[in-house]
Length: 252
Length: 188
Image (cartoon, rainbow over all chains, first blue to last red; front, side, top):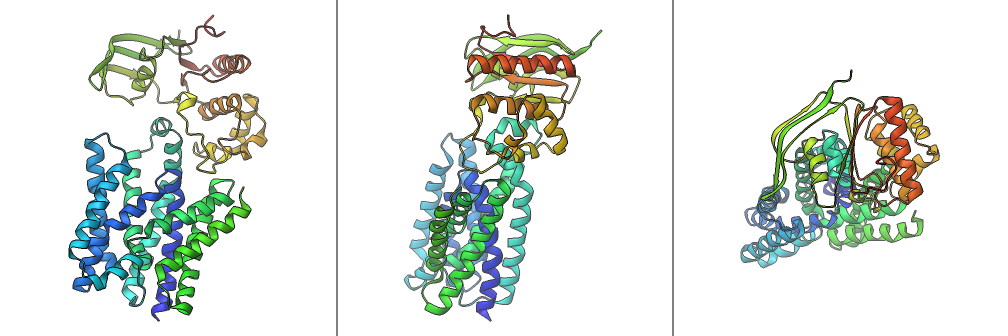
């Protein structure tokens, strides 16, 4: 039963992450999910120590991290990637001060062995929310990426959409740590988006193939896990990478 | 007689502690073309952005229309192809019918097959004409255009200015142009 739950989460979460990833790649922010994944580690550590849901532990920490990045961005002229590096390194440092050694591996590379109905239901609902919000902000954010002034003169509330966008990233990362661990969340969003970029000539193809590659990578990674019993996170990432390599042959 | 479409009174703009515009007042009437001419760094772009409410300012800016379109300098567009956006999809951001898009394409002398091309995969001259089409597709009353001829060869510049002249005549358009180039036909 746990495997079926995992497959359902994989389909929706993988798809949402791939879809959101195409927007992140367009904003040149595909790698941000990596540091944000590391930021979840203190939350995962707490969840593993006190035995509650890892996504529940991860979410407040990623929100806190995004808040600090946003705060530093407002008050300095440093680029976002530098600020992200400061915040995520601090998160990792705090984690390894407190996380027991035996809990380290599942926190870093994911674990789907104990998924229950409630976690599945919440993951699916939140993935659908990410999909819905991403769809709503997708076109305006792409326009803002081409020219922020042009977007502003079209009366697009860029700050509000940017906030929603960051919230979607936070949710996706917090949900993603369950299946790929805190170490590899960037792979959930970045690799399907890169594969989608290779095979697309327009925005519709690009965004839909992001969903397709993300979803299929998670499902096939989970199937591989079922047969090999190797760690789930690395398997999903490797399947995703195989899709990327395959996409190079169909590059448009 | 045409009324004022824009009134600017005692405009002051300070950015990062530097005074860029000081006590500027002027009016623009409907169907007028105002050319803001000056060297690089004189504050021309700052003025256009301020008129659009994109910069903080003190003083008064009064528009008698909300139908305003703006084109930033071509260099400020991210044309590198990170996103596989087609030109047709770029026009989709304006939420106008495909017939309207085809009409404006024809008016600026672009072939409709360009709509299927990628956003960044056209020549500089075609890109500028495409931007003019984008700015005018929803028939604004005012066009604010920053450096219309930047990065374009002389033939392309003539095309851009004759297009602007044509729309100014046919559509009763009010145009505010920013340029540092005194050699252009529209200025002579």
